[in-house]
Image (cartoon, rainbow, N blue to C red; front, side, top):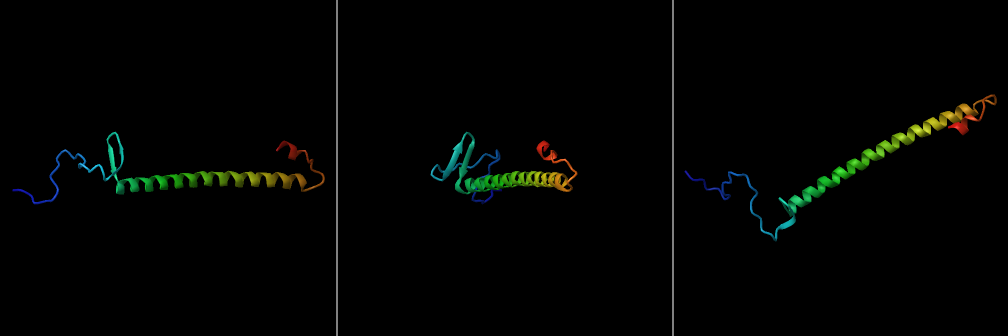
Length: 91
């Protein structure tokens, strides 16, 4: 019993042959069409944005802690005239 499908049966799961005019990117075993190349670029962009977001979040957290620690040191140093102001030089 033969199937009438438009695509041939490929038991080895090898990639279909692609016209070289349709290829956008080729390297070793990869042959990407326009759609596949654009999908790859989208995923790369999302990964870079997420990486930059994590980095910015870490920087924001570090800056917040630095500001809080500096504010606390200044508040303690200048809260009373009796306190020694040398604390600021050590921070």
